[in-house]
Length: 437
Image (tube, rainbow, N blue to C red; front, side, top):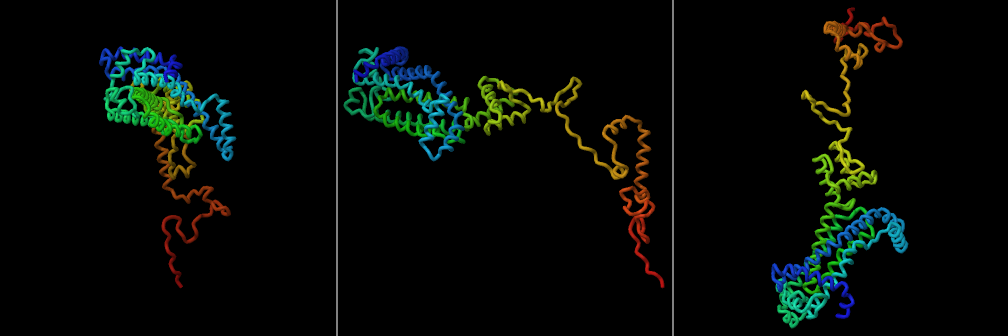
């Protein structure tokens, strides 16, 4: 073990140096031999490592987005070679190579943390065996062996015997309880992180091997942590539990603010964005403009949630632009108030329905055109009164007195009356009287 540690001294020495620096700070606050000083030193090491890995995490997000864009092509390959699994795998690998994506990109943060995890494991194992490693000298080694977290020494393991645990100044029950709780929390946090990725931030409309891989990792990683966790020292469990909690919070932030297109997280985000944009009439943050710009650029390729977002903006009188901004739509009628206090409406004019004609207007040939009616409204009232009188007089006359062309039979003359002999022209008919003999 010492030989392996010496071979990897290029990473164990920096890790031990960082822990000692943090311990010197927390030791002044909580005491140099306390579990708080050494435990917080390990937590601070995790935070420092994860901050350094943020660029790698951003690269992971971009790679994941690239995998999402390949979903339609992957689905076509699945349907084309659904009976030939080998050819399907070959075409998938060819697609990955042409697009420059990697299905294992989601494992990059874990792989990048592996050297630090390995170095911390050997540092804590040296504390358990009483061996100096890196910059940890004899005095720091004695201080670390005295440190306990909730009654469990930093170097104690779940599988340690009672004699070894007693040599570290603790009881076997305390060590088993503390390590078991930390292993459960570590596995649960890993499972929840992967589950929220699968249930909220994955396009469920397309079934691909990438999704199957993510689903497999959701169950494999927690089991791995539970199996190997019983052989981890308490200090390593603190490290891994802290990094899992960090990953979970980081994943929740990404899902909320930069969701995958077509996922449930995108539906929730666009719903919040719609309310925000309609209330303020614009996009304020750069991230909002980036997402709106991407939605506009898709055109007809928008998914259901994106089309719903664009329609909601149109109903609110807003229009999304190609640069990601949102402006008022010109086609929407907007009420404006003039200086005189009169409210006017600009925009498309409403279509007016024609007025209903009276019976006399239909008989006289129909009403005047809209332009004639407008011109007639400027005439004097004297000229309109005779027209009304004439119209009334015409309506009182019998319709048969002046038959028009529509009422004249085809084969008859204009002088022939419509009424038959022995019948009245208007009103109810009088019954015929019997003839007198």
